[in-house]
Each structure stands twice: as C-alpha cells, then as structure tokens.
Amino acid sequence: MRLILDTNVLVSANIQRSYPYFIVDRVFADPNLEICFSAELFTEYVEVLNREKFAKFSDFHSRAQTLLSDIQTFGFQFTTTITLKLIKDEPDNRLLELAEACLADYLVTGNTNDFTISEHKGTKIVSPKEFFEIINK
Image (cartoon, rainbow, N blue to C red):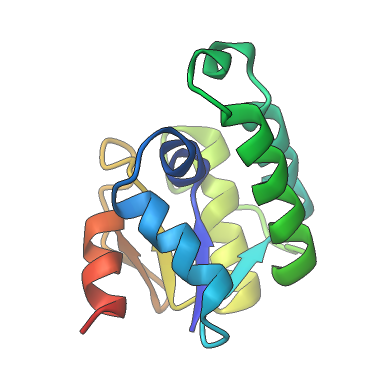
C-alpha cells in the first residue's frame, strides 16, 4: 500500500502520541506500507520540522531528525512531472502531483480545510484517524 503523509501528520506525530504518531510508527514497521515522497515534499518536511517554534516540545527536533532519516532510508522517492492547480493552498497541489506520480493508495492529511475532496485519480484522501482505522481492520 503506497501512501503520502502530509507534513502536518509528521508534525503531529512528533508532538503527541495520537493517530499520526501511531501511523508513522506503523509505516516503518510494516513492509506492506510504502511511504512515498518527492524532492519538493522532502524539502518541505525538512523546513517545517526544523522550525524553532517546535523546540518547546520535548525532544521534538531530535525525533524529527530521526524521522527524516527514516523517510530517506525506507521511503520511496518519486519525481513529479505534472503541475496541478486544484487546491487553493498552492503547496498542497504538490501532494496531489506526487499522488499521481507514485499511484498512491492514500494521502493522509489533517488539513480538512484545504483538502475538501475525498479522492484524486484513485488516491483516497483521508484523515489520520481514518487511515489508522483502515490499517487496523
């Protein structure tokens, strides 16, 4: 199963033990789950996870560095070849472009304000809670 994790899922996974945390933990333990990323998305991961405002959370930055390393080591990098303008928040279109490039099964995001669609070309767009329930059936 191929999936894309929105940056907000990684941030949440490093702040508290909730659905995003359990998903990230499971992704690296289950060989049937493949995390997909592009160079653009990885750059966003690095930029956001290194923001100083997250230093107030205990060990956030050290956990973030481990997570970034795990994504590079165990994830699958894809190159996008299209440009979409389907979502109002422009950077979120990069996730849909990646979904098309890697034929993702799921795009997991906590951003329900911008992702008002439930599917894009076969990729289901789900919340962390929904994805957690899917992988634990």
